[in-house]
Amino acid sequence: MNAVNPDTNDLESEYEALLSFMYLSPVGIIRSDQAGLVDMMNPLAAQLLMPLVKGGGIENIFDSLASVAPELRNLAASFEGERGAVCENHRVFVTPANEGAVVLACSIIKVGENLLMTVLTDISRQVAAERRARQTESWLAGIYTSVNDFAFFSLDAQGRIESWNPSVERLTGFGETDVVGHTLSCFYARDEHVSHRSPEHIALTRDEGWHVEEFWCETRGGRRYWGQVLVAVLREEEGEIAGYSVVLRDVTERKVNSDNLARLLTTDHLTGVSSRAHFFEIAEAEVARAERHGRALSVVMLDADYFKRINDTAGHQAGDEVLKRIAGEAKGLLRTSDTVARLGGEEFILMLPSTTTSEAVAVAERLRIAVERARIDTAVGKLKTTVSLGVATLSHANPTLQSLLAAADRALYEAKRAGRNCVRGEMLDSTAVSSSTCEEDSAGQN
Image (cartoon, rainbow, N blue to C red; front, side, top):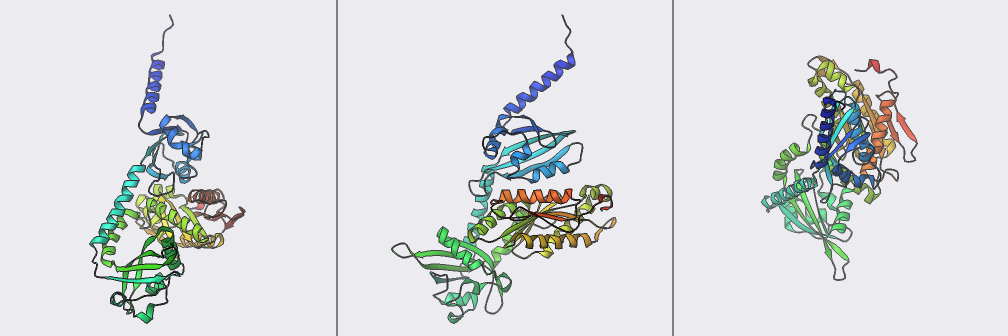
């Protein structure tokens, strides 16, 4: 009788235990190499990924998730530790961020040389509950806000003010002759005067029956207040739109309180820019708005070059100062209608409404130069850094938020492959655009 190697039995037992654990696990589990090539996957993981691959095979986890989370490949590729968490509970919106969104929490762990374990959990119900909680909070806050500070008036079918009553003057200081015949923009604060906001508000009201917007307003005497404007459709008997009723409220006190809470929920604690989750919430709305009104929308994806080197040589506190400075330079260049968010680690994204590809490239290049010229004060002295940037624009080639982000991520990789410290992008006709001269020798960086 041949002797059985006990080590072989142990390995077979461990392998069988692993298979049993993966099969029975209540979460999706995928084993792959660092490039994402899958060699083991449990049935639940396949079930969660099936809507993304549309019946095709799941050979590479990053390819399967590329349309909704292109940044995951970058996170895994840039992770240089021997083992550890690449990302934890990273939210992936499989379908648009609305009430019925399918949302996965993705955690990727490097467990050995060139070996990743990815865990997927369906958190759609949790995200929907969070959204409903925020909506409930907003409604309750509205109920508790003083009802004394409000004005009621009406608009004609073209969205111009056609009626007036004393409540308007009490709240805003404007008399009848000041407002009748004008649009809602007559109440905007000077720095909130965006030409398309009032028409958009009316358009959304027509589509939905009613719509609420909040923004800074200004009284006739120059006092700023946070106004909440509810517009509802008035219809004639045959169903045609006869005009609109409007309620304008001063909710400044509520805004001050809610801003403090919102800042905690929507802001990256280190850099002060928007958090990743908040970015994806507002990005869907921006894409829908751009499509509805036929306006351009561009994004710029960027990350710090050789950031790990800074952490390793100067320490994590110095790395934090570098991230804060990059965020500060970005915020200093953007308009109030733009958004800058931290996607994770050293990666950021800018969302630029009403901005063409060439305009976005110009913004990206200004940011690249600003970061390159910055001297960052840290506990170990002044540091300098650079950033690589990828630009993409909403188009027939990139018609969704997911495809737009994937295009920007590809452009960012092009910038990195070109030597870093440069801008790369895709024009609407898919021809490459670039700006700046990339570093040819990375050894002198940072």
